[in-house]
Amino acid sequence: MLDEARMLDSADPLREYRARFDLPEGVIYLDGNSLGALPKATKTRVAEVVEQEWGEGLIRSWNAPEKGGADWINLPQRVGGKIAPLIGAKPHEVIACDSTSVNLSKLIAAALHMRPGRKVILSEPGNFPTDLYMIEGLEKQGLAEQGLASRDAIIEALDDDVALLLLTHVHYKTGAMFDMAAVTKAAQDAGAQVLWDLSHSGGAVEVDLTAANADFAVGCGYKYLNGGPGAPAYAYVAERHHGDLQQPLTGWMGHAQPFAFDDAYAPAPGVDRLLAGTPPILGLSALEVGVDLIAEIGMGPLVTKSRQLSEFFRKAVSERLPELELVSPTDPTQRGSQLSFRHAEAYAICQALIARGLIGDFRDPDVLRFGFAPAYVSFEDVALAIEALAEIIETGEWDKPEFKQRAAVT
Ligand SMILES: *Cc1c(COP(=O)(O)O)cnc(C)c1O
Image (cartoon, rainbow, N blue to C red; front, top):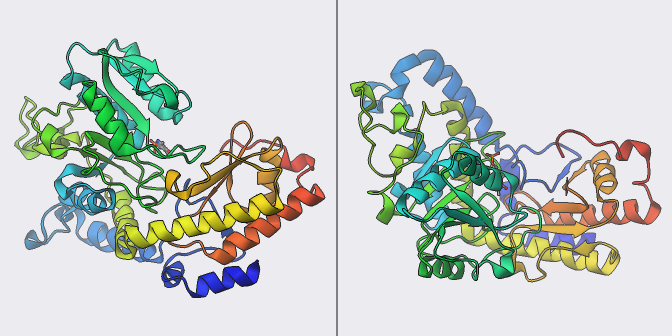
């Protein structure tokens, strides 16, 4: 298997990109879907922003280069505009700001505003918790009502009360992917709008928000976009909604003229009004490097390699470790860049893997999850991971007290 993996690596058109990341020796990293790896260029860029733009430029750096600045003020739009082509959006439809959670809340509230008389935000049970919690939060304010329907019944659940369908495109736990265009059309035919959470999609799978006629989307900067821990997220609003867009966090940075210091709020045009407070420049600068690198590689080659990596892993597991039950779709075109397996001892197995330098993750109650970030994961990584997993399971290496103690962050 290792020989086959090495052959695939030598034929891999993306093989040179691994060296653009700072991956620690002796670690096989299959958790880029939780926290992407560090691009080497991020270290130099962040140092430059700190030392020159902040240290020397000080407050002047907010301004345009013509004024001797570093154009900090336009960083949310600039980074958003670079994320846009990765998700099939136009540059002025995307802005990088806040966290995914905060962007969800802003856009759910904005969508409710566009559908007076409808209060239900429909989602699926088992969606990523923050998506559901944000609906609940608005419900407690009396603004929304949460509706839940399982994914096979979600289309039938779209009645006249549903203002918005909020779904995660690639499910965080199973990797199952919705048909974005078909679901969007069904929701719109029922008079609702759709907000897609692209946290496990952006930078990993093909997304075409324009072709799908999507209304709204949010996504995460620190997973496949490699923006760094707690990186700013992004928000997308289709151009046709820009005029009607009203979000509740009407902070000064979303004002049409923040430096007029007016008493009354007047929204900035388009997605700019999604800004609330001062943009986090260090975080956005790091995110920009991650996004530039993904854009340089290109979504087409990334998607092709992602499918090859996960198929290599899936086939080897089904041959060697049939006791691991696949919970992800078997067809690589129906899933994200990850594979999840069920095993009663998933937690301990995951800890035993980590002790060997193989980082995947565990999701409650019994799921082992492996992410295949195609920009830096090699076929050799995948082959070594399978060897380690097989040894741990076959020898019962996981069955030690230290592997059963739960940590705060899994
Ligand atoms: C990772 C993830 C988030 C993250 O939200 P934060 O606000 O960055 O913590 C949101 N939604 C989904 C589906 C995710 O996978």
